[in-house]
Every structure is written in structure tokens, then in C-alpha cells.
Length: 111
Length: 116
Image 1 (cartoon, chains in turn green, purple):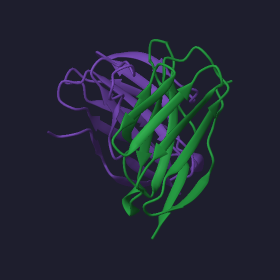
Image 2 (cartoon, one colour):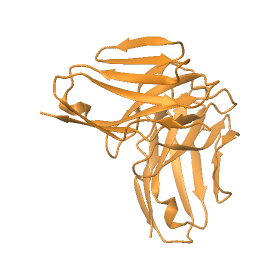
Image 3 (cartoon, each protein chain N blue to C red):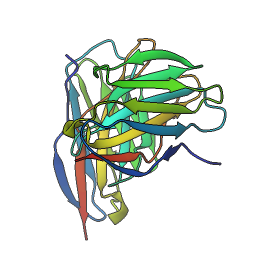
Image 4 (cartoon, helix red, strand yellow):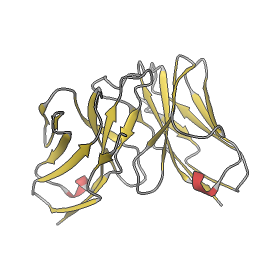
């Protein structure tokens, strides 16, 4: 199977750091994506990991360990606007390269 | 630059009816993918089209069909609607239909379909 597991909900305080984990039971994927989705809006691309290690983009960082079947998204200096659903997804080397998504983690940032 | 545009934004249909959803990709993008997102879940892959040919199909019944036009826009058709088809239908475009691109796929805001 291609199970992708994320916590359903997380809560954090403005200005804090939060780590959203993603575990998967699959192999042979091309890469792992993180998307942000505000309620009623389109998912927007945050990061893409192909190799093991940390990718940093401003306040957002993403980490991948293929051997451990694990990724996380790290959000620093949380802002109220970061309240959203965060989706972990993997792409596979078939002709369609479709994305297989987890169910998403709903993050609520409190003042 | 216009992003991925989808129409309509909202739609209410009755069980058994047919629906057509439309998507215009980003200018220059040749690939369109369709995803279904049920409330509280992640998007699920339905179809991908590249250069007007079907590249992949997810685990959806034959009631779901799609096509891509010469201008790379796309339609998703669903026949014999069921209550369970109520969802947000997302269209995503990419240049070459490969998720290896650094920015992955660009999604539209979706069509919210309600079947009653």
C-alpha cells in the first residue's frame, strides 16, 4: 500500500516553532512534497525533497529520511496566517507522476 | 499571470444527473491533472492528461471521464452522480506532467460540487 500518515490536528502559539510529521509505508517514490491549503482554497506548493536531508526555505523547512520512511515540515516564527491544512504527498515514477496525498494536518495558530 | 482557472466555483446537482467541470491551465503548461478532495481528506488522483492524451487514471469508476483540448484546457465529466461524489474537484497544471519539477503542480481553487 501507499499509506501516508499525518496527525489530524495540531495547535501552536504565534511566534513558536511547530513540526508536522509525515510517515509513509511505501518505497520507490520520486520525491516528497508539502503543500499548504487554507480552507476553501487551492493547495499551494511549499517544498519538495528528493534526497535525504533538510531543505530550508525561509520560515519553512522540510526533512526527508527514506530509510526511516519519515518526513517533517518545520514552521518557525509562526504567524496567524499559517493556520491552514498541511498536506504531505509523494510522487511515483509511473507515466502520470500523480501525487498521493496524506489526509492533511490542520494547524491552528493561537495568539 | 493568470493561474489555473476552474469553472464553475460551486455547483449543486441532483443524484443521477451529469456534470461537466472545466479547467484552464497556466499558459504554456501542457499537462492537466484532476483530483477529488472529500472534506477532511487529502486530494485523490483521478486523471492526468498530457498533450491531449490520457497519461494516468486513478481508482475511480467509469462514470468519471475527462478530455484535454488542443489549447490544453480540460473537462472532467461525471455521469450518474451519487451523493458520495460531493467533493472539491481540483485541477492542477504543470509544464511537462512530471512532479519532479521544483514547483510541482500548480492547483486551481477548485469546483465545489454538492450532490443532493
